[in-house]
Length: 272
Image 1 (cartoon, rainbow, N blue to C red):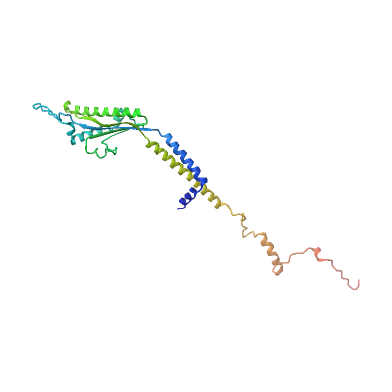
Image 2 (image 1 turned 120 degrees about the vertical axis):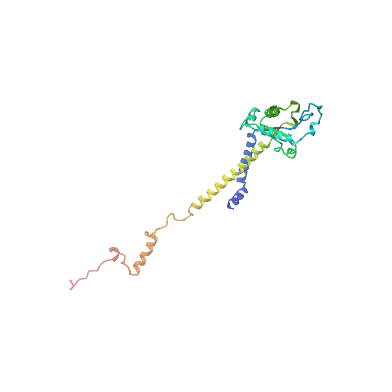
């Protein structure tokens, strides 16, 4: 409680508040400038079956079916397989995303995007998001990721010996170009502001506590540096005891100088 009382007291002093505010604003401005601008681009994809369906019967003519009417749990399973396959370090490196690099890649079913959170669990959606410090890099990585995803889907169907007519396709639903994201710069500014406030008031609090400690340790004005001990009585005490000792007869009287006795009369016997 004493700490916060001291801090509130410091906050009421203009000589402390003004320098602390200047320091906090300077650090906030520095944090905003130091953090680079971030750009985000994304694409939402959906898996669809071919118009002829997913099977071939040579004895019957190929029926034309609307692909948008063929969403099933099978496609959702295929989307989940692709998402798992894409979230590996080898795939990330192949599209230009390295560990601890300036570019971040997200591949999921839309749960990382609040807009797709509700529909991501009801359909075979694949959401790709790229965040980088350059809009050109973000667009390049997004295109490479989509191409790698479609190639992964085709390779897996070839491995399963599916007929090309029945191949599932990944189609774009929405693709957004790179847009500036100021959240990183805002976080830097807020962090610098908080750092300035904490550092400023912390330094002021340390100075105040140090002054109080030094004031408590310093002797009071007019106080003797050293108190007389019992074995060595103070000179004033000795001077006060001497007259008392001479007057009460308890000790030998102080010696007097012979000059103070006056002249001595000579006594002669028999008139001589």
